Image (tube, rainbow, N blue to C red):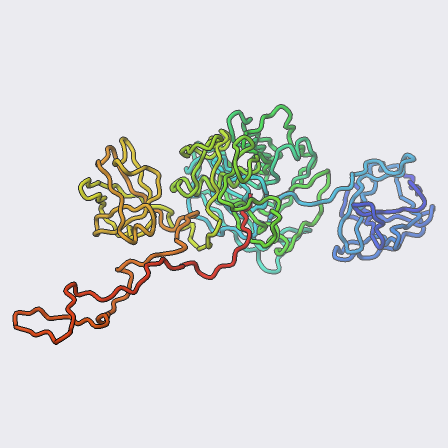
Length: 622
């Protein structure tokens, strides 16, 4: 055995941070390349008599050599053994706060360049937003549905369509044959289940108690980034902590490349990363050299909502009880030993403005990534939309389309020439260049509703030509001025009424109603007349306070029914005469008002019903 001490590559070392600035007060930790948990010291002299002093690295607990305020130190003499030529050095460089900056593996003194395999310095940022699944749904129903959002993600440009390629962490399976459930148990306080790493508050537990037939997919999906081009052909490291408790003890990790919605889009590409064999103890799996598949030759759909996802697939067709947490993806060839973000940091990421959020501002400069609520339209680049015609409008287009499909009157659609057209589906309509109206914003006051309340209810009606009456089983929800939409299938609407047009109900009896064109007309019992009963099946859809509804009036003329009960005194110089059966006498000079009314002092002018209001610019997030 021959031990030597080599000076390489230079007598004095200089270290820099990730942007090239001197790493003053930084540290260098030195380990055996074959066992990265054991320190392998470096020396001050060529005889190997004086090891460099090692100090504790702040916030890390490891030992390292301290560099001066200029990021310099040395000389360093590196120990090598001819009998163990593969036993080289593994180096970790930290800043003054103990934040890992970069590493060198298999460092040797051979060659004038100093060092052999040097890893390119990269920002070791986990690309899985919210990998601890903060703000999760908790314990789910049994069995699980085919799609369920588990926790929020934060990836702009992705859209919640039927392709299940949206911005959130979700569970997806192809059928409901499994008797399964997901829960998020807490780690025991003070425990260290993920040795060498930082344990989150809880973890995901998946249980399946039967052997379900016909399963081809059963995954938890994590969005990585919108646009598959971004990471095409990039080398990554994937890590995950997992353990198995019962049944089949394995997990499959895979990429999902989604090429967007639209005719002609390439089908999904599912690429295996690794099959993990689990034990009944928590274990960290690190898979290096994982390349994201090349996207060359693929075709994107016309909606611009393509993206890359990491999927964790559970055993198919088998019972299991599996726990996992902290799935992570890092660019390059290395991964940090510890990965941690405070919940404030995660909250700041997952609660950034999302598609459909409102924003109010006095600033008249339109913020990027938002559209003004100017009662205009949005669509793709060929749509001639008046507010924004661009591919990036699809997530908002899809959201409005989905919310308004039951009440299209609040967000009507037009083709690129401006002619009104009916809804088909959001993908077909968007790629066809149809422009979709934004929900009303100008001059409107925002009021609350709830996504848990059904947005519309539909009632079959029979019509009565002679009285322009609609007969329904119950008109309890048809209070006067309630917004409704007439629809027809298998025939034609009554003459005088138009399908998919907004009307306002006039309550007549518990089973009858009429229609008016405005709220004011409904309140004044000014109803529409129609000359035929129509054919086929006519229905009335009660919209209620659905999303996007715009109702109310700026001025209102009171009706007699709205005026409070009161009395009037006779007009000046006028008396009322009782014309009963008995005789009566009128006093000299007195007048007689045979109409039995008082004088008219009212002006009949509509009054203002707008609440005190401050106006600001209003925007919606794309």
